[in-house]
Image (cartoon, rainbow, N blue to C red; front, side, top):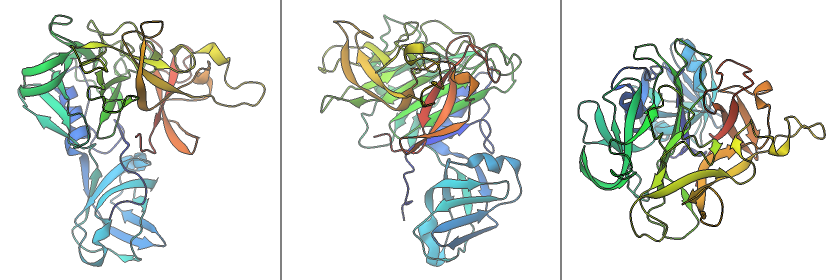
Length: 398
């Protein structure tokens, strides 16, 4: 039985049980992407699973990090007997060190079997794994089927590129960006130092697109940098049948821990090589892509277009869609290609006084997870130099 609520929008971070470690060691980003997109992680055996009045209560051995599972999607397996409908993806509505709860349409009763639970993966596959290299692709048959190539053989950054199709880990057609534009690929930041110090991170995904949001200075120097907002996957196109509306954001040069480059939360980000494989016409090769707020400019939450938050009049938070542009961020040559799914921009400033990374707000009936965004901005709570971005963790994004 499917969950009575949407489970397609998933989020992950370093605070979950057995979460992958992101650091300045070769292979750490591929490990993170594999765990979040492909396999899931944090397998635990349930003590009990009981349904009462449309709520399933899963009891676990006492573990502090279980309390961080609120709003996450878990995969329940191993239920036998009359309540097998509890198997599958479930969205957590309550989390404590010993209990997880989720909504269900299953009948009241106590589940039997060797029941396990883990953080559910986003529904992608890992292809052509090599030594610190791999490609990732959506398993969703309705996706556009493009590949994310990752070369994670160095320490503080990984190289990335999109391909229309791939036949081997370093062999593909339709690269974006092209090899002429960036011979080695674009860059996703991991750490500010080549060491094993664990860094903070968030990853948000559905089966079509992922946002990778590292806090790559957060290990030894927590005040040095903001949080990234890289992405790869299918946007929401305005043209029906747009078969190439997949984009990849990446820094043009090695960011060296400055994860703010190429962020979806920095409207019209210029310090990046962000590309679609082809134009909306379906012709040619890689073309420029931009994420642009429909109202406002610059860094979400540091954008004074609509003044300071909270406004003196009604105290209201303003959030706006982020559009997917082609060719240019604005002007006569810009092409409005679609929307970036699952993310919103705030055209207000001083949000740092009210919201921190990991906070949630309800807006338009959906719960949004807050990330700290921008370039080389402070990562300490209340930092006045960092913006705030908003990611939908209710779903669906499409």
